Image (cartoon, rainbow, N blue to C red; front, side, top):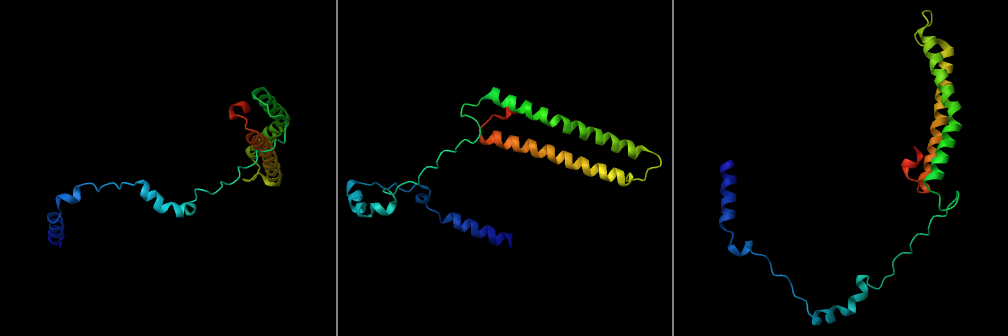
Length: 149
């Protein structure tokens, strides 16, 4: 089977002429050619009007000149507002660990631990939502990410 394939490839290569390797000539267009296709000019889209540019986004928060100092202040305000939530979450984590380390506690920690874990998840979700809303607002108003750190 391989010999048949080799023979077919050799036969195809032997039939190639030197002209096949040459480049095809590039067509030359003249003014006569342009006059001949001029009646079809509108079919090419040359006279079509581009779609209207989208209207600039209206700023909903603050003035358009908000720069780095504004966004750094806003990020600090958010951190100050979220600090009590972070502290409560840290306290809940400690309590959960203490309950689980007690020798008489069941493996899961009991219903109290389950309730504390539920409260911890709710706190963490509130923190994430507040941070996400702030980051979205900053992104919409084109604040640089480094300004929020």
